[in-house]
Image 1 (cartoon, rainbow, N blue to C red):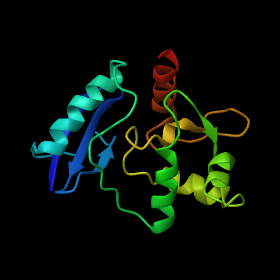
Image 2: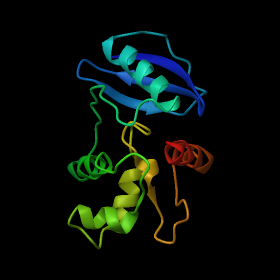
Image 3: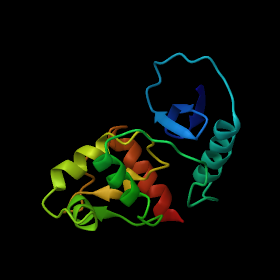
Image 4: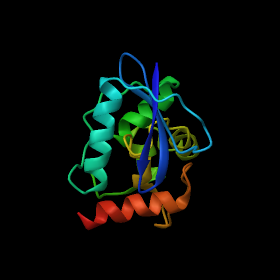
Length: 150
């Protein structure tokens, strides 16, 4: 496994990769990492830079998130939400064919190990309020605003 820190408009993020792809992206800036590099981390740095410049709407870097089968299915649905669009947690549950699992879906979103790349920020509350975001609502707001501008 390799780790590096990446400076973004949302603050410093810690990226972790394995031989398959990026497995974690963490907003915790208190973590000290031994700066390493591999092809996945280098590609992620490039793609994040393009994303924040408004030149990229999808990520192509290989990913390797770890979670339960349910979490992985929720995260797969997140990847289908188009750039600049939002859906509600209940809509996401319906897309999973589990319309009564809104809370479970929201909980799985909160455990997303690859925020930004797996765009859980595109899920908002039914009343159009932001809902939650494990990286902080201010980050979610910045991401949504960035995508609306494009």
